[in-house]
Each structure stands twice: as structure tokens, then as C-alpha cells.
Length: 364
Image (cartoon, rainbow, N blue to C red; front, side, top):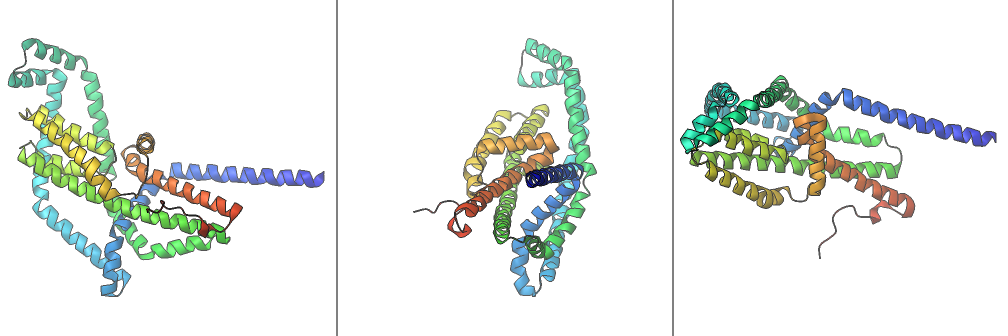
């Protein structure tokens, strides 16, 4: 009887200890999520530079020298970019910033309905109805504008991340392999070490391919937007095309926001070829989603569309825009851990881990 009670007490203590550790982990993630996000973006930046550093390491005979050379090259490229293209973007951005308050006042008062209606040949009744509608929903327009302004202010407050991320990434590039070996050395059991090593290997492959593919898609989108908007002579084409390329980093939501922003600003600026612009944006979205993205992204993430949409919505609720950006890699990471855990469980029951495959089935 005493042995049974001792066994029950021991199990209870283990369960309680595990629950406390889990609660402590969740509390830590909640309290330190900003710091963790900075480290995550630093890891992403390190994955982006890893092939360049590895390729240059053999020529300069040293990983530290390779990292320094890559950083110097990036600094030169950024300086050249902002010297030639930066002033034009800043000029257009300043003009757009000055025009937005005036446009917002016209929307709140309903005057924009009369202005655009007269240019497009709308009837007086249509102009009057739209003017009344805008005046009635003036509070809603003001609230939406305030929320957008707050989001922009939050991004501006966290701009110092751009300085801290490359510094942290340099440490990951320099000592990333040592970090991995140290983590593996903390696991004493060979099966558990093999499970952890497999998870780290799969995560490395997935994140490396995902980050580089996402950057490639963003650059393609920026080039396509700039060419398209410039040919169609859309107002503020340089600013809108650049923002559209940046928003391509945000899965699902980013391209939609970019299209709405381009069409909305063009409409408010009385752009005459709005339908052609909408058709061009729709055609580009089809090309990007069904031609370029599947070829460039490949099978690096392997998420069902419903899972991706769920992750994007959940990430937006938890952490806003940053949560949306991180939702896809986090969902893919959870899938990798689950898949490796199933293999680990099979090993404990039936045999060696090497006899089970975790990758996609071989093609005939």
C-alpha cells in the first residue's frame, strides 16, 4: 500500500512539475515575445546570408572574414541604392504624405464624391447618394484612418530592430553550428538526440529555402509593380511599387493590402484607367500565385491552404502584422516537429529510426 501511494505521489509530482514548466514557458513567451521576434528575424537574416558566407569562406580562408566581407558588400549596395533611388522614393513619399490629409478631409465631408463623379460623368443623384453615405460613415472612416496611423507609428517605433537584427545575425552566422552542437550535447539519450538532430536538420532546410524563396518573390513583385505602374502612369508609382514589394513578404494579407492600396489611391487621385489597372493587378496575382510562387517556393513548406489561412488569421490575432509574417514558418515548423515525433514514437515501439522515412515518398 505504501509503495502504491509513493508511486502515485511520484507520478503526481512529475505531472505537476511538467505542468508548471509548460506554464512557465508560456508565460515567458508572452512576456518576452518582442525579444523573441527580434531573434527570429535575426535567424531569418542569417539563413538569407548563409550561402554567400559559405561560398566566400573557402576563398578568404576564414568564416569571420567571409561574414565581414558580406556585410561590407551589403552596406555598399544599400548606400548605392539609397543614393540613386532613395531620393526619388522620399520625394514621392513626401508628396503622398502631404496629399493624404487633404484626401481624408474630402472623404469625411463627402466632397470627393462630387469631384470624382463630375470627372467620371456620374449623375447628380449618384453623387448626392455617395456624398450622404460618406458623411454618414464619417466616424468609421476616421477610426480606420486612426488605426492605420497607429500601426504605422508602431512600425516606426520599432525601426531600431533594423540595426539590431544584422548584429544578432552575425553571431548566428559565426557560432550557429556551435549552438546546435551544444543543444544536442544536452540530450543524453541516443534516440532523443537523433530525434532532435532530425528536427533541427529539417528546420534548417525548410527555413533556409523559405526565406530565400520569399525574398525572391518579393523582388519579383517589386519589379513587376514598378514596371506595371510606370507604364500605366499611375500616380506615385515608385512609392506604391516599393511598398507592394515589401508587402509581398506578408503571406496572403500583404498582396491584398497592396492591391487595395494601389487601387484606392489611384481612385482618389482621379486616375482615368482604373479598370485596366485592376485587370493588370489581377493578372499579376494569378501569375505570382499559380506560376512563379509554386516553382520558387517548391515543397519547402508543404502546408495545406486551409492550414496556411488558419495560421495567418491566428498570427494576426496574436501579434498583428509580425504574427502574419511568422505564421507560415511557425506552422511548417510545428508540422516538422509532429512528423519527427511520430517517427520517434515508432522507433520506441518497433525498431531503429533509420528504417522509417520522414521525407516525401520517392518518385518512380
